[in-house]
Length: 345
Ligand code: FA5
Image (cartoon, rainbow, N blue to C red; front, side, top):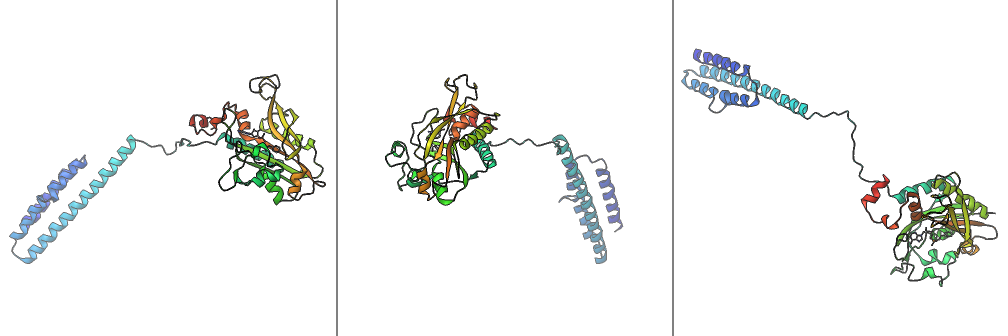
């Protein structure tokens, strides 16, 4: 027994000596093998138990060796933890992260120029008391043509102009279909606008697309005059082009659902009327077809044209965006070309 206790004291002394100047996890692993591994000093101590005579002695020796084992294991584990957290600290120091730095995340997308201009038009018209309505892109001939006083003989109803679908519907050729739907649904006085996509069977070029955007406007009330139409257009366009007061002119225009009908031009916002390539040297830009609501359109919706009248306009949103952002080819809008789209961030 005496021999065993001496052995344990020496074991501990030697172990303490070994861990005194310990400086790496690798060295600690070597020490672990040396003291408590399979062929360790601890195992050779166990052999002493077999040489003892009494059961009490063997039991006591077993307890002493076990305590020693627990003691060594605890010390080794504590040292391991210390080394591991030191290692993590070192690594963090090397790749230091400053959590207070602002994070710059690359923006993945941007609003389409049509969305940008549509939002502006929405805001301006809403501010003037107009309510936003919407209608279907797949439309019936009734709402797109008939209820708008467009006879079956009108060229717009030709196969060469309109996309006819197999289910006897069409793709709406203009947002004016929202006029007929609104008049049927609501009673005057009313002010609505309807932005949306339109489709025409066109040959595509720099200023014509088969799918493009318009905004329809419609006001029906009592005693409405052309002056109200002009005033509304001037306010809308001045705000869109951020000009204090755009100059407009009306020319006669034919649309079966307005009488009289007009083409409203604005004085060129680039050259201010002097003449440039944008206005093809005329000084004017053709911008908004419009007019006073035709009595037949009101009659279709069972509204008394003797009591009510109003005005309507159909702004080409895609062309407006071209003017505003100085885009010289309409085909960019639907191209999905990121080089184009990224400019509108
Ligand atoms: C109409 O569509 C009428 N519904 C407008 C209207 C409404 C008149 C209310 C009177 C009262 P127009 O076919 O001219 O009119 O088209 C209106 C605008 O849509 C044009 O000025 C143009 O800006 C735009 N537009 C027409 N066709 C195309 C096309 N293929 N590509 C791009 N924009 C187009």
